[in-house]
Amino acid sequence: MENGSINIEEIMAEIKQKIKEQGLTADMLSFEDVPYKKNAQSGSASEALDYISTHYYIQPYKELQGNGIKVFFKKVLRKLMKFYVEPVVFEQNDFNANAVTVIKSLTENKSADMSSKVEAMELAHKELMIRLDKLERENAELRSRLNGESK
Amino acid sequence: MRVVQILPTLSFGDGVGNDAIALKEIIGKMGYSTDIYAENIDKRLPEGTAIKADKLRDLKKDDVLIYHKSTGTDLSFKIDTYKCRRVMIYHNITPPDFFRPYSASATQLTEYGYKGVEYLRDKMDYVLAVSEYNKSELIRMGYTCKIDISPSLTKFEDYEQAPDEATMKKYRDGKKNIIFVGRIAPNKKQENVIRAYCCYRKLNPNSRLILVGSANGMENYNERLVKYVKALGLSDDVIFTGHIKFSEILAYYHIADAFLCMSEHEGLCVPLVESMFFGVPIIAYNTSAIGETLGGSGILLDDNDPVFTAAVMDRLLTDDKLRESVIEGQCKRLEYFSYERLSNIFETKLKAFIEGK
Image (cartoon, rainbow over the protein chains, first blue to last red):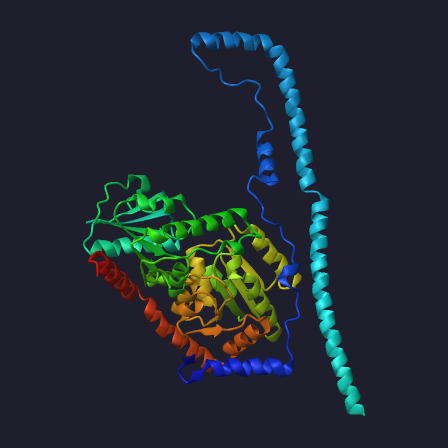
């Protein structure tokens, strides 16, 4: 690989030699150490939560289907059942609204927050350990050089 | 005689879609009756750009059907029902193993993509691969028909549009800007770009890394990258742009001091060509079609060691002579990808196939 008067291969070799001489290494946290959600599927819990958050309120009455006579009889039946259906549905709606609130607060609760904080701290800890190890090695090397000079 | 193209989805601003639209123009100029057929057509595209695939009928024996292959789709298994001459343009499919840890749907889609490529190996009359790397992949998969190389067309005039002013102003602050452009995807190995930057930052703290690209569909991988950046203490200096406007992408190329690519699988890698256009010196790890795309220009690394990559980056950004020489080499290479040249290649190859040469 030669660009004009510059020989890039020569430069690469020079850089590699310099790294070797200086004993430089990539002391850092490995990407493999970073946890991640494996293979999340669609239709996940968060999608279900979105669904119940928007659909928890149930209408007691649905649109009546059929021809005129059928609709008339259905309307009569609906009026007759009203005293029973309405309180049950409203009670169910109250329950659903509270249940959604609880589920939402559980998903957003401190434990999820804490676990991500712990995860971040663990990673930072690993990274610091790597740095400490590097510093200790450098320290030992400097000490041995100093000892050599003083003798 | 008709020469028509077919693909599963014709998207707005997408590489394969842009290629199909450009080819339609060329085929039309060659004097053939032509159209693009797609199962899904992006509504943002002008009316009449393409026709629904189910309307593709009455192809005669001498007509030519060009199938763009880049993903998993049922269409691959229907191509042989068209009783005409069949040509495939192979844009490449990312190996599913890259996606396996992060996305079941992307894994299945790419697996299905490879099944489609395998299915078509004895059903195509001619293949145009966008790179030599793609051609060799098809030969490995048992393709015996004639395969020629015809890289995807890039209209450089699109890059001459005005870049986003706000982005330019924000990042032209004296810091060295290292960029990588490409969707957030495990085959692109953004973690290795981050590792290299982490080492470079020790040499030059007055720098930043900008990862330009959407994380759509790769949220798990993106989240892991963000955590990695945070753990390395680089959150302030590594920027994930996410999905952005075209004018913003242009702005990032304008403010870039170097383009760092550590990708391990590319069928061509258009962002490298874009970097050449914007005069951004490239450092890239030599894998898949990367070396072929660079064609001797840029700086090609034989090792993805972050210390080595960082040292090369430092040298490139401090040695003006080297930098100028790299940019000069890239400018020369850009001529290979000129629209006129590539459209001539396509025209010649297609004409030869049609005339049975």
